[in-house]
Image (cartoon, rainbow, N blue to C red; front, side, top):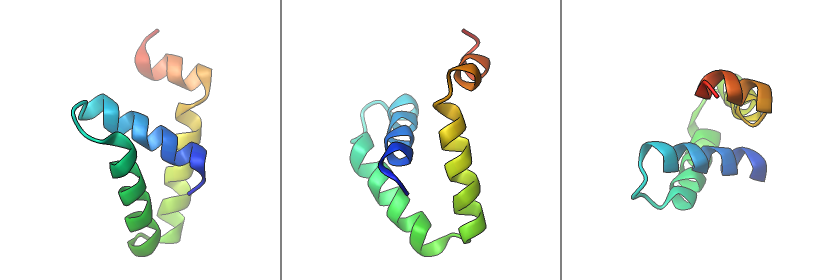
Length: 64
């Protein structure tokens, strides 16, 4: 995964588990996904993470 996708994943971790080491968990999750998940599913996850960084999508999902 690219650094932007890992950063977005870290933000999600921080949102749902504020006391966790979000950066470490995002990196571990990213490595595990690349090793174990179906490449098509990893591609879909990348698209979702990229979409979450778009202001319009972010606004729709957050209600702001």
